[in-house]
Image (cartoon, rainbow, N blue to C red; front, side, top):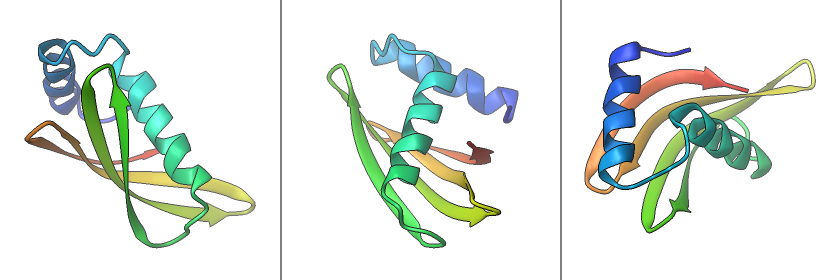
Length: 89
């Protein structure tokens, strides 16, 4: 998994915004949604709502040996942006 400090900051932001899902679950959901767009090797932005809170993810999908990987670069919750820079999927 990614940096524990970032995870803790995200978890605190989730609590503050009353997001009941786990951080890992949301990041995986966002990764899958980015992959479903089918846009490879370009930075793309996706916005999803969790309760009343919008979460925006910026990532890059790539395909290696028929397997899609997703690099989530940043996640924005409200006005706070978090640098993730880690692979999911």
